[in-house]
Structure formats: structure tokens, C-alpha cells
Image 1 (cartoon, rainbow, N blue to C red):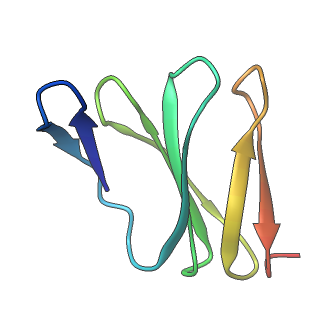
Image 2 (spheres, rainbow, N blue to C red; image 1 turned 90 degrees about the vertical axis):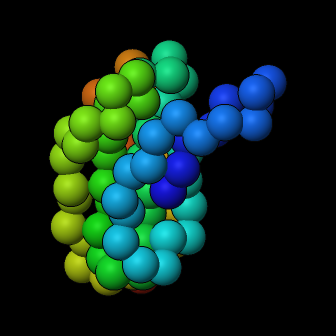
Length: 81
């Protein structure tokens, strides 16, 4: 996964997310970025630094996820039910 500066077209950083990501999203306040993947994991990073924050293991492939408005929770969707 790559973070780009739109104005300069420069790559700012890379965040290793594994294989088969289905979804990538930024939290409401822009603090975090997350990816949901077919490898049964949701990965979360701090957006400013690119540092990993969490890896959430699901029971099956994760096709989508969304942050709560306060950025404290993530809801997932897919075969992880």
C-alpha cells in the first residue's frame, strides 16, 4: 500500500498490507489508515508516520471495513461472520 502526495505526485511512504486487499480507508479525522484483506486480516497504521498500530484477525476473508466517527472502533464485512 502506498501513500501519495497528490500535488507533487510523490510517494510519501509504503505500508505492507499483505496479499489480496479488498478495501483501504482513512479514519474520519485522518489519524489512521486501514486495509481489509482476503487473508482474514484488517491492518491499521498511523497515517502520519506509517507505523503499524494493529492487526485484527477475522474468522474469514474481510471485504470491507469502516471506522467509527471517534476512530476507536472498526466494523468489518465479509465472510468473517
